[in-house]
Length: 225
Image 1 (cartoon, rainbow, N blue to C red):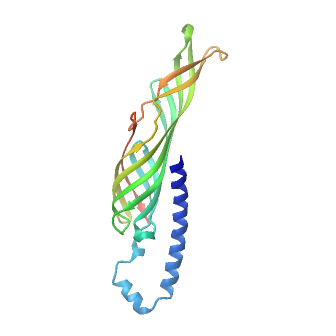
Image 2 (cartoon, helix red, strand yellow):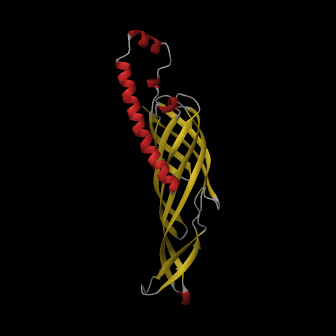
């Protein structure tokens, strides 16, 4: 949780510094001499970098998520904060639910063009709101129960992102955290709402989620501006 707060504060802090940096760069450019302009024209133009990217990622554990990223001019275009979000229904035998996944963090590009190979660190949360149907109760009763499951991890990734207006990316990594193995909930008798019992179940099977962490693997594509 502390890492999430730190990354979130760093995310907005870096964006604020980025805006200040771009304002200063624009002012310097306006006041530059024709000789400086000609020198800049003979070197790679930093402003040709397409800084903002929006697209989708397909894989685990996000299944399908919306992804946004902004490559900052700070530190020679190496740093790019990102945010991923997805939500989708879940069904597994007698279990129904809704999954919400989000991740935010920072990637570090190894070159100065905001593309190519990169490494990233982020914090993610996978929340599952489940409904357990046909729960066996005492005296041959059958009930229904609800539970909320939260899987919070710190993620480390390696990836590759292409440049251009249309981009493609590939990511592979691992998330570490204190993942619950079981869930306890209160089940209510379907015939008599006054009768309830406490029940324990293994957490639902979620692609990419293991006992000690979660596997991260996805491909993505989208547009850059």
